[in-house]
Image 1 (cartoon, helix red, strand yellow):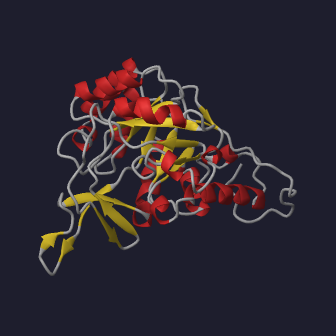
Image 2 (tube, helix red, strand yellow):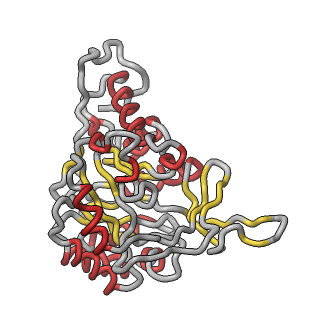
Length: 322
């Protein structure tokens, strides 16, 4: 099927219900392709007052480390044109507190719960993976190998193909659920890193994490962020993210989960056409706590308008020049 270029002559009847389920690898099927992105949605429970979380395809929680982590000192966030820079530094309650306090509450929500895990060393990644193994209510784990605003771990590993393959294989050995690897865009060729993740046993790859950036206060001549640099997210990065998803989806055989500046259904469809099986909504949730579920509703409306019965018909269907 070709990607739609205009509304069909006979759109779906109002009662028509498009099929939204997507296979994201490792035997995991999501009820729909819209998830929230790690680091932008807390532990999910904070957003319960705003909408029914069970409508989402999944929730990816804040990155978890072996021990509680305070993150970077303020200032940690600054707005930029069409986006924002953040240098939170992976502040989190630690994997043990997550398992004891948050996951039992999340498990009662009818949606896929994905734990994002972070480490400063191989042993850290192994430790968190071991702790999460067999946890009731956990659907998948996402390895953060791409955070640009910490001194150790994260992107230091994520730019090195051998380290990506090694840590992916390490987490894969200790995990009882599908393993996703979150990729950094701050490399020369992201497909090399994606292939390394797959070689290590990744069931899916997610991209992109934030681009490294900096803001300077011209009055004081000092960096705005205490950490000096931070991760750029928001609509400003979307064209870059779509391009990288397009490249990776053609370089690997595992499912790709796309993210980067999605604020409306049209943006989500771009990522699907580029090759993503699912999308994660990030910075948009800061502006509108219900952004993710509104994007889902918009995607359903788009499918009805264009006579698309199954969301998988959109995946990778961009029409390239011959």
